[in-house]
Length: 111
Length: 114
Image 1 (cartoon, rainbow over the protein chains, first blue to last red):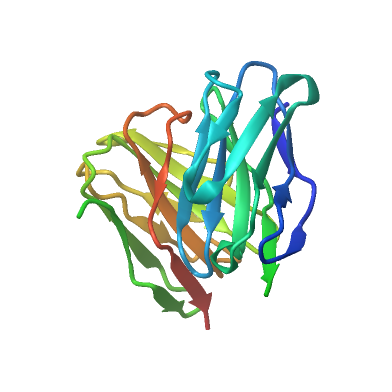
Image 2: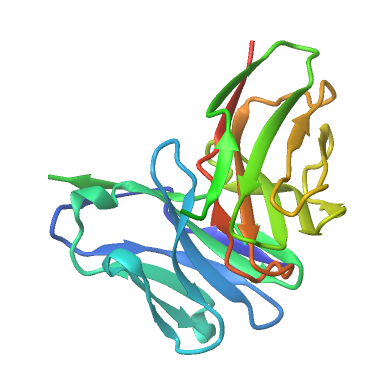
């Protein structure tokens, strides 16, 4: 069965410190993996996407994620948090004809 | 500018009423999707359409209906059979019909039941 788990429902970091949002997945095949960001009462915006090319994927706004098949993980990182990064982040796995969303991680950035 | 528009931003429904949420895209995308978002549950797929005049049920289609008469439009009707319709509804589209394609999302419609 396919599933995606976001290990933290809420993460707080200080402005200027690194961000780590964790995502683990289960998949029978080689999945496509995505990270989306959602600001309050807005739609989802694609941050980055992995589709079996380079395992380290760079996205918008300084975010990147590393696909680790041995750990079935696709954690999202950013070296230095900015106040505008405060939002909800969703890890998404697609396989076959299904698109699976994690339950989201809310990121708070403390000034 | 190309994009996906959803209207209205907020929608109020009385019990027993059907309401229709609009979703329009001018990206020339073949596929369109409707998701429901509830706090702490991520997004759940209601319906999707990979091509005009065709659509499939997602994980939580009961109490909802859709139509896809035009490529650019994919309206969602929340019927009175949907017992818990209060949620944030997101429409998305993708270039092709494969669900592995990147999906582009509209700004959402928040539905509240009075």
